[in-house]
Structures are given as structure tokens and as C-alpha cells.
Amino acid sequence: MFNRLFILVIKGLLTILPFVITIYLLTWLTNTTESLLSPLIPDEYYFPGLGIALALVLLATIGVFVNLYVVRLLIEQANSLFDRVPLIKTLYGAIKDAVDLFQIKKDQNSKKAVSVEVTEGIHLIGFITGDSVAEVLYPGQKKTAVYIPFSYQIGGYTLYLDADKITELSVDVETAMRIAVTGGNSIKPESKE
Image 1 (cartoon, rainbow, N blue to C red):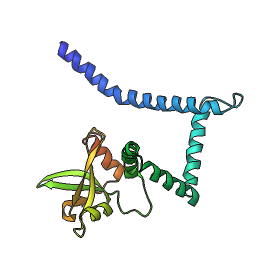
Image 2 (cartoon, rainbow, N blue to C red; image 1 turned 120 degrees about the horizontal axis):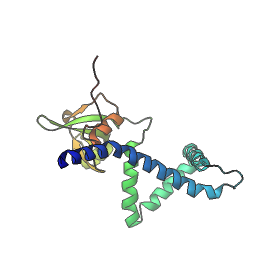
Image 3 (spheres, rainbow, N blue to C red; image 1 turned 90 degrees about the vertical axis):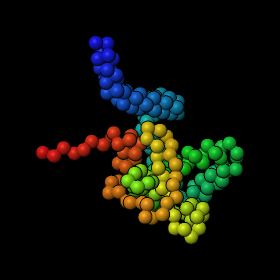
Image 4 (cartoon, rainbow, N blue to C red; image 1 turned 135 degrees about the horizontal axis):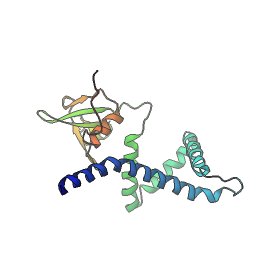
């Protein structure tokens, strides 16, 4: 009897946990943004939610300015400064690399979802991150860098593979990332009627 009750409690917890965590994180982000930006807005103009709207406008404005030559030059200078400070360089580099992994660039041939055969009959989902680093590490060997994320963890590793070990998948990068990170539990098979 106690085991059945325990199983029902765990089942209920696992059902509501994704909702609770998502709502909590969104609420925390909203409250933090509001508390940081509301002091910048005069009281007579302020209403709840204006801080979020201001943050969105500010981010969109930054997105526009990033395309300007002068701003790109300033960003490159900041990158070079951060790359010279020992502890900051490690932290900043890791964060920048993680963000760059998910960034979509028009002329980029990378960021493809692929299947990697690690041994016969065993495949991992990965993402092509580019060939430039592979060429530096393995000159003339025509290796491809493939990032393999860990399931249910932040992290992963990069394999440098020959083309015959890589098969491009017919799913988009976002879907493949969800499958890889959740161990395949996020995707439900389509029901046929």
C-alpha cells in the first residue's frame, strides 16, 4: 500500500515538475528584469510589464547595432581583452563557445544534425560544428568536428571524424538537440489513424 502511494506521489511530482520549473524560471527572469529596469523608468510612466518591454526593445536595438562596423570593432576589442585575462578567458570562452554552437549564421554550412557511428551498430546524435579546427589539429586528414552533447547534463565532447562515420539526419538541429539532451524521451512517435 505504501509503495503504491509512493509511486503515485512520484508520478504526480514528475508530471508537474517541468511546469513548475519552467514557470518559476520565467517568473524569476521577469521579476529580475523588472527590478533592474523599473528604476530607470519614471513612476508616472511605469506599469507592470514595462521593464520586460523595455528589455525586449533594448535587445532588439543591440541586435540592430551589432551589424554596424564600429560596434563589431568594439565587440572584437572586448573579445580580445577578455581573451587575455587568465580566469575570465576560460569562463568567457566556454560561455561564448556554447552560445556560438546555437547561433545561426547565413553563410554557415555547419550546425547540421548528424548520426555518428562510434562502433558497429552503435550511433550517437551529434552536430557538425565546423571543419576549421579539425584542419588545424589534423592537417590534410579531412576530419570533421562533431559535437556530441550529454543527455540530461550540460556538457558534451567533440569528436574529429572521417566522413564515412557521419550520416546527416533528416531532422532539424533543434529537434535533434532535444532528442540528444533528453535521451529521446522528449519525442513521441506520431500516432497513425
